Figure (cartoon, rainbow, N blue to C red):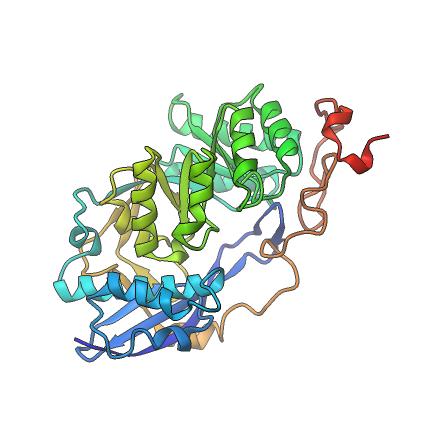
Length: 410
């Protein structure tokens, strides 16, 4: 079997509501989903969800190769980008190709990927993650009632701009999940998407922990700040989760060396080989792993065969437009099917006729870091995009001179 070519297309995820985080919101609830299709001379096509950036240059490492040698081909793709580096979106393109190769390998073997990788249980525990910072209280409750209806009893909310608003929203979701679980206490997490300084992170979470029990806080400081993550971890009770934006195994080394991470995360768009390698390094440090991303089907298959998987993120309950998945959601877990490979079907005609190339580039949203991120001295009282939180006067822990940047001390 030989790789003969590839194709790219872009579909969309239609959430039906605003989605975003502390950095911004897509108010129309539409996000783009890039796809790479890898063709072979035996008529098997593999599917990978991820970036197209530098796809032609990276494909030079794959053309004419046997796709079943996926592990060696992954390293070959990394070497292909040696001089310019593989960080960022280029790593996403490598991940998309890598995922497509694993799909081909499992299809050629006539097995679902989870079985080929050595998984025993097709069920993968899930938690709800609504990208929900732009929702009103009523919208928030309605969204998590849908997650609760399929058995989810853990939830990760977006926040980080306002202590009391985060407390209020976490409490609302806790009540929804507690009622659905007939009194069983749910697990709650908070994701702030790198929007704090170290001091802000400790103050914010410690204040929330006066009344709430948080399983983890995600990306409290910048992704590369190993010392900062360690400082935050020592100052709060919750675990620190991070890693979804690290593009390469080597980027985890400083965090692990500093004891700065409790939950090791990898993004679905970085590919299966990256997840497997990161999981083994985390396992050597007695740390659990947790996949991140919408439509994380490749990492769900891989999660069945690693000993330290804890839970996977479930964002939208529906697949992207034009994509059919052999995947169910019930009793608080993803349930993988028996289709060979990843179990992904792509309707190229439907995508081409109705999407028209995907979402155009937008000047603002969660993909753009706000100018004042990490430099707020008080709560904004506003959601990203300008809508004001429906709250009365805000209460915060007192601010001492030691909490202020040097330029603000008199």
